Image (cartoon, rainbow, N blue to C red; front, side, top):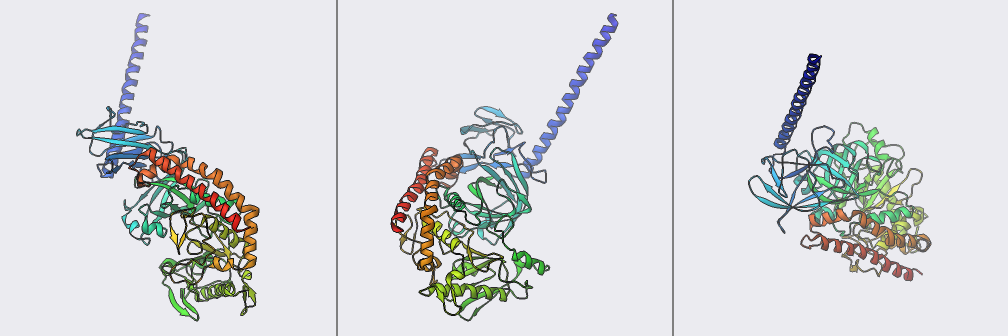
Length: 573
C-alpha cells in the first residue's frame, strides 16, 4: 500500500516538474521570440531616439509595423516631450536600439517591458549615465491618426504641393479602439496660405480603398486641416455647425484628431471630408466619372492644357481630344479663385472683368464644355453689372442664372463671420443634374474668421463692426466681387435680411453661447499639446499660461459674434 502511495506521489511530483520545465521552456521560447522581434524592430528603426510603442494596440494591414511615438525635443526649455493620444493607458512599451535598459524615475525598465507613465515630468537615465527630463502630455476625448510615409520623411511633401508620397495609416477612436487602417495611395500638402506661410501644414490623403472613417462616412479622399492661423482651433467647426443648422445643401463633416506622421506628433488637426462630387458628399451628377468611362485609356492627371484668349475672355483653359457626353450642361463643380492659382489648374476661364473661375470637377474638360461654362458665367456677370440686374443680350435676369437661396446663405455665413476669403477664394459653386443654374456651395475654409487679426482692402477684419463681404473687395487685378454685385440687387438684399432675422441670427447666437465653449472643452488637452508643439502663444511652453490664452481666444470668438450681431441687427433693420 505504501509503495502504491509512494508511486502515485512520485508520478505527481514528476508531472509537476515536467509541467514546470515545459512552461519554462515555452516561456523561454516566447521571451526569445519577443527579444528577436524587438531586435528586428530596433534594427528597423535605425535611430538612437527614445520611442514609445503601442505594443498591443494595433498593427498596420501588413501585420508588421507597430505604432510608435517619438519624443520631441524642445531646445527652448531643454525638455523631451511625449505627446500621447487619448486612452493610451496600459498600452505602452519603450524601445531602444543602443541601450539595454534605462531608469525611469529610478525604476529599471528593460526593452519590451510595458509601463504606464502619468502626465507630468519624469527623470530618464540612460545606461550611459546620461540623464534627461521628459514631459508627458496626454490628450483626451478625441481620435488619433497615425501615418507613415514610404520615404520615412516629410521634406519633399513640404517643399511643394505637387510632391506626393504613399504610406500606411491607422485611426483610433477616442477610446483607443482601432477604427480603420490600411494603405495610403497618396499623401501631399494642401491649402494655400497655410501651405505657403505656416510651419504647421495641412495635408490631403487618399486611401487605397474606400473606407468608413469614424462617423464621417465612406470615401477614399480626406483632408487634414491644420487650423494654423486659428489659436482657438474651433472656428472651422463652429461655422460648419452654423451651416448645418441653416440646412445648407451640403456641408463637409469634420472632427478633431491628434495627428502623428512617422512617429512624430504634428498637432491637433481636423479630419474632414473633401469638397468633391461623390455619393456621400456633393451628391450631384458625376460628370467626371462619365468622362473617365468615355476616355478609359487616358490618364487625366498627365494631360496638358491648351490656353488661349477667346473673344472678351482673357483666358480659357481646356484639354484637347476628349470624348464628352451628349449633355454637357450639368454636373460641374467650380471655384472662384485668385489669378495665380487659376494658372495652376487644368481647366477654367477668366471673365471679361478678370474674375478667375476654376473648373474643379471634371478636372479636364473639352473646349466645348469650358466655352459653355464661360459664356454662362459671363452672362450672369453682365446681368449683375446692369443697374436692374437684367441682361439685355439674353433677356434674362441675374436670378435666372443662380439659386438665390444658396447664395444668400453663403453670403450670410461669410458676412456674419467676416470671412477673409469671402468671394475671393475657396468659393465653390455647382450645377446639379436637374437645373442649369449656379448653386453656391459647398462651404469651405473658415479658419480666418470671427476676428482673426488681418486687414484686407483697408478693412479691419478684427473689428466686429462694419461690413466686409458686401464691399467691393477684390484680389489682384480682378474688377468685380460677386457678393458686392449681388448686394446691389433689391431681391437679394431683401432675401438675406429676411433669412437673417427669421432664422440665422438665432442660430449664430446659440452656437456662440453654447457650442463654442463645448468644442473648446472637448479639445482642451489636445490644444495644450498643440500649443507646446508649435509654441502657438509664444508663452515659453508653460501649460497653464497656454490654457489661459487658449480660453481667452475662445472667449474672443464668442465676444466677436455677440458684437457682430449687435452691429448687423442695427444695420439691417
